[in-house]
Image (cartoon, rainbow, N blue to C red):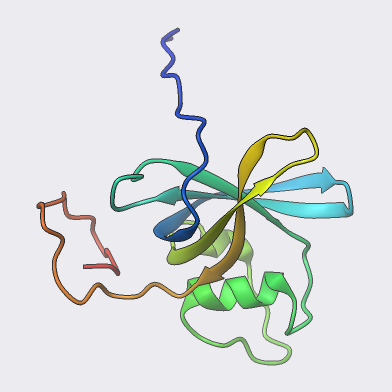
Length: 138
């Protein structure tokens, strides 16, 4: 057992879009009832390795954040009466639209505003980065 910790950077990321991967899905009881906590990890650029958390309410409504974000992670539309196990989306890549917001405690925090399908970069990054198997941003 290791008792070592690494102190994380607590400064919010600048508003923008970040290539990321869904790394964790947890069922929680939130302010508004049952919710799913989504944990994303930024996979490229200056903020690679940073994590962002977002919440969705489990809903099959086609206009819900839950369905829209699932479609972005899947890279396709969901059809009426189609069932989806959200756990199957862990490990999928996306592009996060992130903003800065002041929370109720007066602290500036990041908010995941939207989850978008990954976009391929038009040219390779200036510095070589380690290859990730199945990297949709390559």
